[in-house]
Image (cartoon, rainbow, N blue to C red; front, side, top):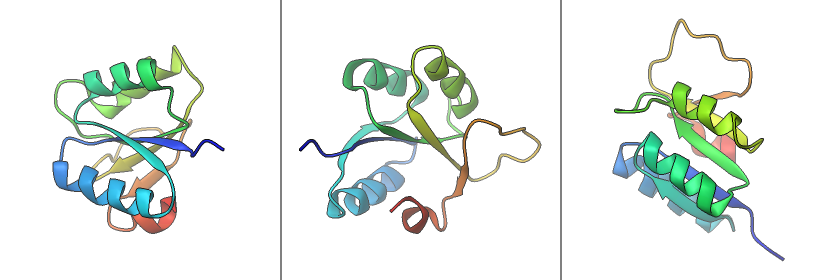
Length: 105
């Protein structure tokens, strides 16, 4: 049986490392991307089952990444945030980075 494949997208390597360790310890296969452009490539190539997407990233932010992903896929997306006030969120849940591993697992 194939393990669920989760893509972690964050521009902070320590966040990626932390999430991957926790997810893999709980039996998930993980993929990683350090920015929005790389995330789009991984989504196209690997077809993850879930994406944990940081909002505040350089180049292409999480808002734009989600819009572009939605044009290609219906993959489940959970967004993390450090500061994202004033934006309307309809299509996915925001996860606070401080409690994220508990919420995800």
